Length: 345
Image (cartoon, rainbow, N blue to C red; front, side, top):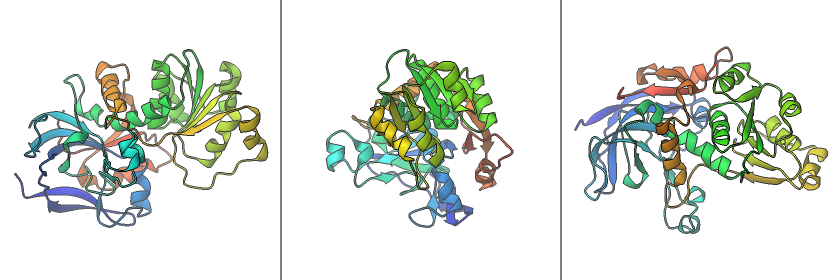
């Protein structure tokens, strides 16, 4: 086994350095994964641009796939050479939420790529319980998209759908597109709204009804019984309440980064429309990591959800911060950007 490896670490605000660090040795209940592909999540953006990490240096990366290189002494259900994806949450297992089947709400969790070494590296050591083997029908490139798909699945489950229901997704990014595809797979009439016409075009290529104007969508297809907000923008977080039908349900997946202000008339819709408003946090359930993970793998492996067009860029570790800069470029279409690390298929 190699003694050192290459990794991309955030070392300061707007600084990503390609560094040589010690290759981790897996503990008795861990496995060492040779990373194949790793995606950039929206949550990684402030970690780079704003230095929003718990400490410097921090190796990012929590959406990834790879091949098991080594297993710990107590691991008997996994083996070297298995192709896998990994759930990045590391719950404590002993707090009240872990003990009642809600690991996403863990009070003392760790997280691969933000609180411990992430997968923007040649190797990463992870708990064996977080590792999910993938079938031969799922390539490692697409397996790096399992994690964002689980977020969409968890959020859609919070909507408590009815067959044939009309649903509107606000935000045509990766999670938004996945949410719409999941809604469609559930038998819903799914609509996507995004102010970026390029993202609308991608949604349409995926066979989804999409527009830059939510009102136009509703006028044509009817008021949605469910609105899922994925953009994390104050405007859409408020507008979601104005767009949903009476007795409807609003699910918030997008994270708020600024104050969300509601006009009295918007807040009144919660009362007068008897709206159900809920949030969706991460993508885990019991038994850990949850049905979201096995379902996401099945959907991708079976081709029920085709994620290939959602990947819009591939980079090497040597290109360092380039994908972070590209994702902010208003001139281009940037959905899921992946680092190709080992290049394994």
